[in-house]
Length: 397
Image (cartoon, rainbow, N blue to C red; front, side, top):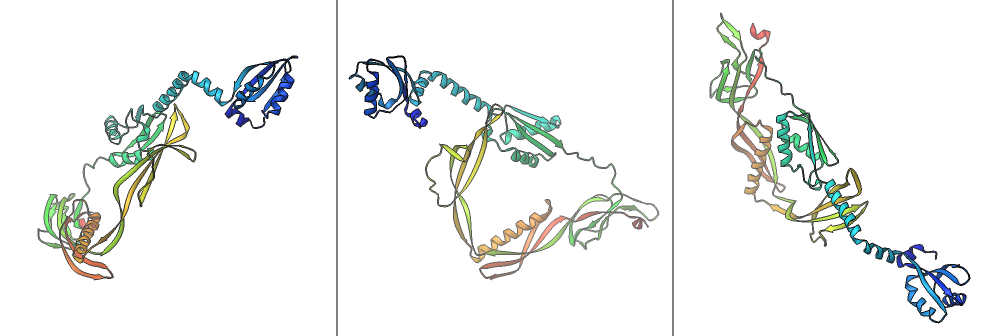
């Protein structure tokens, strides 16, 4: 037989024929179109050969017509291998269960090692890691990748300059570089406080220095607000002027808002599919069926599967399909103006210091052109306008 794969799948039997007239029996098998191969003589009255398992019934029927005795030496191929496997099912089930258990344990977090952090920082990091799901006993499939963990830690813990994250086996290793926060100087150099923009003084909180302006006074950019020179002309000294001068400032903003716009939003409906990926081929595990969404976005996450410290040649893949829809938004002129004001206010807040406060707004100009509302808005803001300026030698004189 040339096609060994076919014979392996369907099975073969090694047969021994003994008795008188074995040659005539072999000839009869050939005439009956039974396929036999590897025919060998064993002594003077016996012959061995191989036959397909599917021809066994026909062989038994033919041997009845001859004074021969047949015996089956062995069976080969998938049917016999499967039969032997069933006899040892307990062993194979135990081996499979052992492999599954070890694979699961190899993909669970068993350790979190933090180096380079002070005890206080290590405690804070462990609390933050627990919040983002990095904890002992959790499957690595449901934990963010190391780059995402690193970014979240650096964003959420302000006293970290850099943190290195490495997953080695079942342990996460963190290398921390803390910020060296400089201690404030014991004494500031002599300085004045000047205005950093045009404003009307609203309130003043002066800790050190001499006030040079009053509440409700208009000041120009660069004007002296608090002097660092105190005393009189006969007995004066220079100090660091410290304080907070709140002034009312003005900003002009131009903004444009279309009356009609198209955009896409998620509907909240989603479907998840789980599969085992081997190379470019995926074996579905859960989440079957067709995607019924007309418009959707697909997000794929792949996780390596490990056995002890070795990465297996397949991955656990999680696919999330989120439905989205096209939405047409139409504003009337009044709503467009309101939305434009909110947009202008948000843009201005992004440019202002965090302690600044928008107190009023005035629309200077508004018009509708080419399906768009164009606004020119004037904002009043209360903010700290004081800026430190060192006292130079010329200021002393």
